[in-house]
Image 1 (cartoon, rainbow, N blue to C red):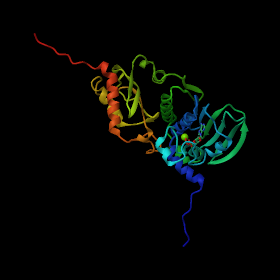
Image 2 (tube, rainbow, N blue to C red):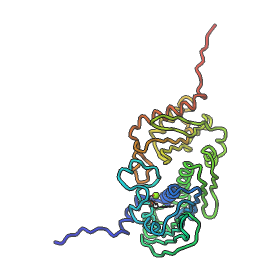
Image 3 (cartoon, rainbow, N blue to C red):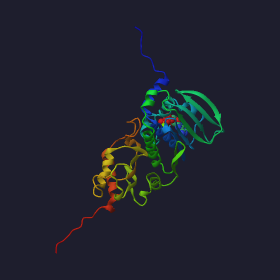
Image 4 (tube, rainbow, N blue to C red):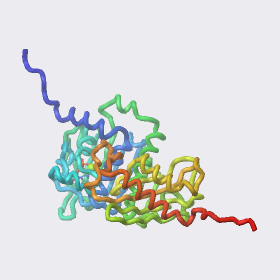
Length: 339
Ligand code: ADP
Ligand code: MG
């Protein structure tokens, strides 16, 4: 008998790995926006056609890539963000696995245009099925544009699995909002089928919240600010009267990363207990900052779930911080005397 085990060719391995990273257009949007943030961009534009099925393009004015890096970035496990195992515990960037662009290149037709400030000319590269099919110098401004065309063109089963344009677009808008909310000092825009859906000028967090969630929160936001040696919490919660019957405008960010946490949500609900009806949901946008060594973001492919070293402390701080902010709205018990 001959041996039968073989290593998979790169393009097949990349396509399999891509299944984890890019489940739908919105997951690609998240990865590309985060790369632009990591590149230090102050302006990030997202352009969508056909709910991302035809085109997902992110244009940034970040630091750009050299000609060699522009090819390297599509390799699997290729990253400029970590170098050694220890770096995993000090992550300050949104990305670190070097998986996203390899996945992007495995499941779409990609055109990358990029230029660094120190380079005279930029680089334009086209990639298909994980292979560079064209490369040429181009004249462009400093920054990067990545266009992903025809997502899953080479995986019909996945393409057929995508939901309606309306449903996929909702997911894209959700991801866009999460990133834009987290970086109010960066300009963001979102254009879908030539229609501008968002145009978010740089500003404060308060301004960004109102730009995104609407004017109904104007004068209805309560500042939350609590600094301790262990962690910092800052952000805004809605005044009790803004609580809604449906869950919605609720955002937690840990070290600027949007996370879903039923546990921390419970901490906020607890803090609101005395000031809103039990069947309504408060609005909150809260940023928790703590030593990256205290969290593990590497537990979920989309990094939306993280593990805290000490979850109970975080819960207690969140609850206390929100309660503190809401103290002015608590009904102070009054004593009534019969004379
Ligand atoms: P990761 O973000 O985990 O490092 P990616 O596959 O998303 O992995 O990107 C690979 C590398 O390509 C990044 O580490 C970065 O050096 C470079 N890169 C990606 N997007 C951009 C961008 N918009 N601007 C500059 N460099 C980028
Ligand atoms: Mg990345």
